[in-house]
Image (tube, rainbow, N blue to C red; front, side, top):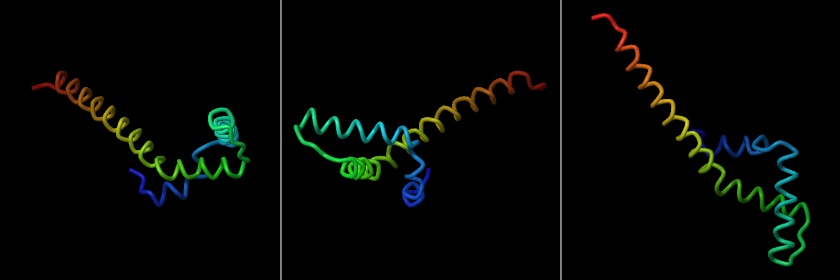
Length: 88
């Protein structure tokens, strides 16, 4: 799993420019419609960065764990298939 220090250094690459823009717009929209507050792009980006810093690594690691679990299951299946055809 990627250490937090590497995750922070890769934060810029987590979202494409379009995804980042969409997320910032969604945050601004949320504050406007749900809280009746107007915030700017800088504040919305700061909120997004804070959320990514707080939970980004955990979400990333859960995804990695799911992939590892899936690959282990597939590897086990492949080993079983090889053992079936193995000449004894």
